[in-house]
Length: 54
Image (cartoon, rainbow, N blue to C red; front, side):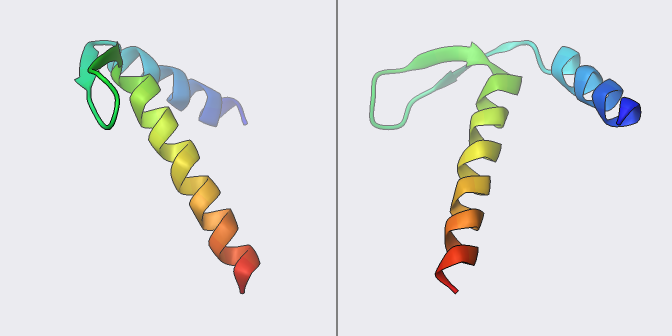
């Protein structure tokens, strides 16, 4: 668990630059690691939904 925590911190501190994102709403500026975290959460939710439908 400690290794995963350290790797997560390395990933976060390596991706702190701001990035602009625009989908359906006006452009939003946020750290890259946060945008990737949102993408991971949405993908995980889609995977759970697909697994429960079967």
